[in-house]
Image (cartoon, rainbow, N blue to C red; front, side, top):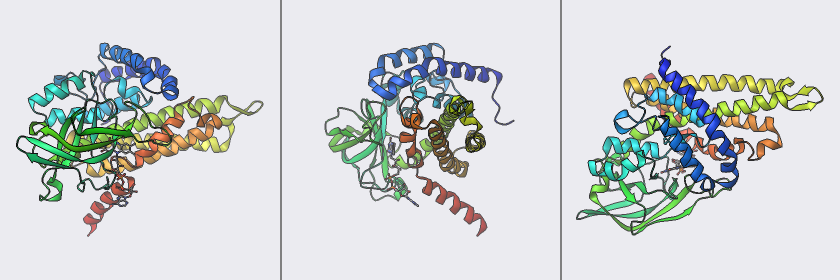
Length: 396
Ligand SMILES: Cc1cc2nc3c(=O)[nH]c(=O)nc-3n(C[C@H](O)[C@H](O)[C@H](O)COP(=O)(O)OP(=O)(O)OC[C@H]3O[C@@H](n4cnc5c(N)ncnc54)[C@H](O)[C@@H]3O)c2cc1C
């Protein structure tokens, strides 16, 4: 019973689910075929409607204009919104803005909050988070080349980043850069806010992913910094605290991702079942009557249910004991749910036959873009390794 939510929250979740089905699903076909820019005015209209209903910033505290859900409650929200590729965006809790909001609330100065956080919370601007570099391993974030050298009251930033999601059209980037090269490796980098348009900061291109360069919010960019100067007051938190802040952001962020993936699994499951019961493979004989399809449906149901319980368990532990205490659970869900997602999407596509390869359902879009779930926020192998090492420590 520990994963139960109040009757009031249950009602909110049901209304949100109806909203996503009735208001957001109908936008998907245009998004998948014509791209997000073609939809911008409809999306803004839906955002206003969601906000008028009180569905805005579910993960942010009431003090900052959000719904004030616990991480576990937000897990349920994230599952509902994850059923559509546009769900999180409409409720203004999309990555990477959601994580940027959280760290600005926790570490931002009053001036940073006013300039960068307020318009982000209002949905007037977007942001991005630039940590990974093309020539250094993202799986070892303590090792990077981008530097920020202090010169009086300014930092001069030099370096290259890539896979900075949603940089195209963003108003600012939070950039990880080495400020203290001689410190212990976990205390070398800082997080620095760099507004787009700052001289020396260029979005070089959008990197194509599985054949799609993407655009706007739905893209991943390469960034270049050449002698880019920003005031020292643009640094978030203490100098050298960049890695610690990043770790703090990633714990809750993984719950958000994992529950979004459960939402994708549930939508794929709905689509596969609906298709299986109506598609005839011979007159009067549907796909649903085939043993293999029955197995896939039963296996998918078991895997999704189990994955959800694991994620809620991790969220509950973070709510109760904090991110550090829940680090094993966070690593376990990160690789486990990413693999369940891939398996369920693959079965759903297979059941749809050629239709599964089209963009007339969101399945192919997710199959292309969520393959990355096993890579970003720590590749599978890194999470497995860190959990296994901690387990072995208890035995030795
Ligand atoms: C779609 C997408 C969106 C992203 N968005 C962002 C973003 O917004 N901001 C940002 O900063 N970054 C972003 N990233 C980058 C992401 O965080 C990195 O790709 C990730 O950290 C892995 O780093 P890498 O690609 O450099 O792989 P590497 O570190 O080079 O690792 C390559 C592979 O080696 C293996 N490996 C690595 N270490 C180990 C180990 N210790 N043991 C065993 N095997 C290992 C893994 O299989 C791994 O996949 C995004 C990536 C993708 C694909």
